[in-house]
Length: 261
Ligand SMILES: [Zn+2]
Image 1 (cartoon, rainbow, N blue to C red):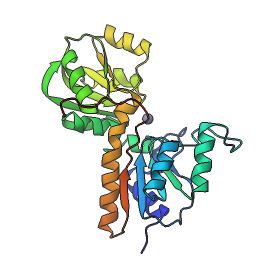
Image 2: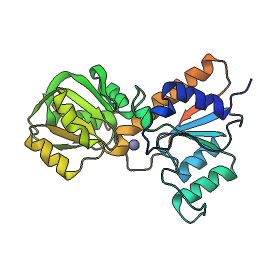
Image 3: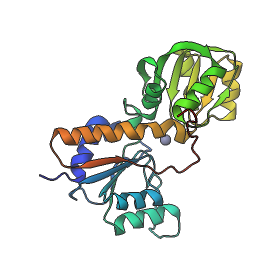
Image 4: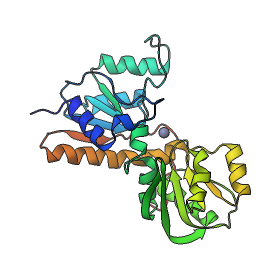
């Protein structure tokens, strides 16, 4: 029996039901055909032209992304903008696309949970739909934690707040979620790691003796790719489908290599 796009759509749906996604979101099967046979899948944060090329190199029939294409409604499909080019390339090459976005953000396969695991947080738990909290193995200053997060994410991290503040409980909301800092504080965290810190939140948090870490939207969500690919691979192996699931090797932005190996 062959796996199809629908097989993998169903597996993702068990993990992160599409009905739990936000109303503004656009998740699930977005491009291609549900009955297309799949023996190779590429998992990635964003579908770019480089990712389409990578999918073709790996002879993948399906790309699973975190961020959806067609997030904003379109009234044409011309190859005159980046998304139009990508959509046309997908269709022309018989590639299908599934997105798991805000539905995935609410699960242990979210970028937040993945960051928490990379940081070795203890008692990692989901406290609100998008907010994960955990205890650091050892309390340390915000300044020291900046270095630890940078090393764990392999992406530059900026600290907003008092570098000497002692952090023992860290909240994480990957991607664009700096507005959750007050909720994180009320849940007992001394700091929030997120991906996009706006000035007014940095200022308000700092004046409330709370620390914000900006790990970048990409930096705080890219860690979800590998565990999601492994989950799908294990699920497919478990039902004896002969499908290879690849985490994408494409990196759209500058990446900090771990100098210490
Ligand atoms: Zn995101």
